[in-house]
Amino acid sequence: MPSEKITRIPIFMSTPDTQRWALTLSYDGSRFYGWQKQAGGVPTVQTALENALAQIAGEAVSTIVAGRTDTGVHATAQVVHFDTAAVRPAQAWIRGVNANLPEGIAVLHAQQAAPEFHARFDAYGRHYRYLLESSPVRSPLLKHRVGWTHLKLDIEPMRRAAALLVGEQDFSSFRAAECQAKSPVKTIYSAEIAYGRGLIRLDLHGNAFLHHMVRNIMGALVYVGSGRLSVDGFAALIRERSRLKAPPTFMPDGLYLTGIDYPESFNIIRPELPQWL
Image 1: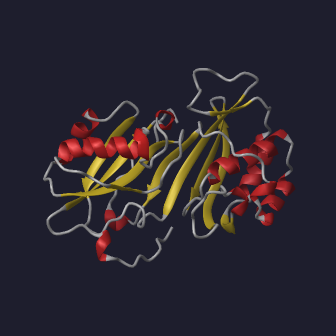
Image 2: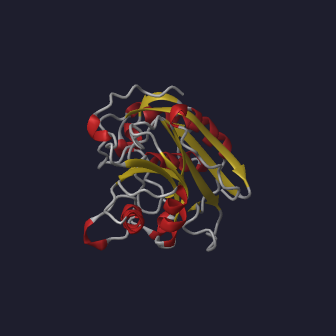
């Protein structure tokens, strides 16, 4: 997919006396209160990462993330960038940082980035996967790793409904009330439902996502699969552009940020999906 043209603002670029680094992270969202640091010592991914980076850099470090995740949402390939005057090899930003991180977060890859690279503004696509268990009793071994419903689901209507998401549309029906995005119009490049290893899998690829958008879509698709909402009703829900008429937000447990798309010129390495996912 073509990237949007970005107008460079000098404040977004590293300075001559600093280096810009890009990190790829994986984390267990159930251990943290989301990505963004908060007051009061609440454990967040950003706080833990910046504290660990400071230990290696010998100075305070501020990070910029490709996409903020909520409490309970996982990531297999989150991307951040930061600037530092500290001169360290890539392995220091991997092994050294990992040695100072709490359980539940790992730096997978580190690379020196172009001075103008921006983890958020240069991202033109994001990939999410939701794993869902449909069974009478929730598996205690899968809790916090996959979503769950006791309802028996038919994935064929779910597939037809998911296909209706593709394209540039107003996704207000799947937008959280506290969403701060300037526009509810986003582009979904692909939306696929599959079944395997006893789990239903939703894969979404889009240019950007609204707050709670994937979880709200999953909640509506569960209604479709259980027969509480028809495929035509799902289509009408999109057209109505009203969160008030939509099914409830689904649990975060099974949601994974699995990839970020960047222009090839930046050569940002993206790891393959874990085989277990």
